Amino acid sequence: MSNDEKIDLRATEPTTAGGYGDEQAAAGIDAELPALDTFPNHFDDYTITIENPEYTSICPKTGLPDHGTVTIRYAPDARCLELKALKLYFLAYRNLGIFYENAVNRILRDIVAACDPHWAEVEGVFTPRGGLSTTVSARHER
Image (cartoon, rainbow, N blue to C red; front, side):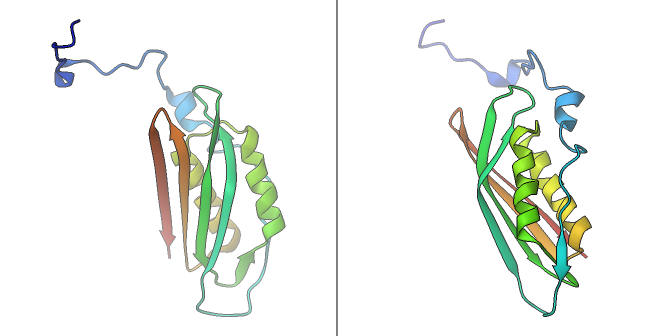
């Protein structure tokens, strides 16, 4: 192909060579992870923000490491997340094959199950791969 030729991408079939199947898409969603511990909350109407700038996991497709910053924001009700348990929970992702989107939603699901906050949101800002950076956000409200 010469430099003057153009490809009409609308006329091409999507490539899935080596494809992403259901196995990769569901990887890590229900993996066993350390429990998130909590402690009693004694105050009302405030927000807790926790940032993990050293999040790592494994791409279930390529086996390569993924890196990013995961930020948790939530308004506690009766219970707050205990930070040491949260650190151990995050460390378990280090060797877990899971897509960014699944990781953010899984973290949110586990936080809500552990402490039942008024609301919670998780944002993952992942480092660029192949020139693309990705931010994934998920939110839960009662």
